[in-house]
Image 1 (cartoon, rainbow, N blue to C red):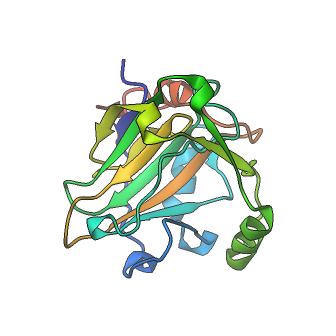
Image 2 (cartoon, rainbow, N blue to C red):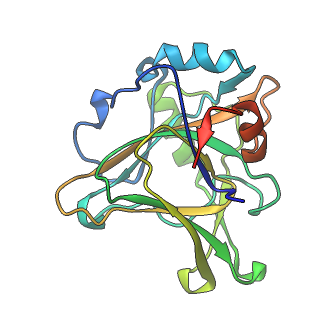
Length: 205
């Protein structure tokens, strides 16, 4: 069973935000609430779920001058609670998201984030964090095997508890992603498996 990705049908079109019209010097940026499509919030409420205040954008440049490195989006190790994100991606048809499995769990590397830098970035766009972002995990590529790869050219549910990265081989087009962490009403993460149940009938591989 594929526990990494599903396309999801949504009842509206999410156009590429104008803030993604240029390029970025970093692979991650944070997005202010004013840029979020209200229809998304209304639709998710029908399923008794919501988005985190921490809304992210991810950028992979043409020819991989800037790319999203291998990481998970959790403060816990992959496989314990595989949280889900709802992603919208705009870019070339040959760019992908890749998922990785560590061959030996002792090779996982804990990455502690600079909280002062995070706080400054959140403050700049008016975000009050409602999820823990103080660390994540990664590993060296030689200690990993790639277990899944998918072109994200439609609205998608992604398992972000597992290690993942992006790849954009296109020499002329950049890749932008708008990424929403899905939460239950009590602010706990919606897991990938839970999302498959919540959105039953709306997803496909």
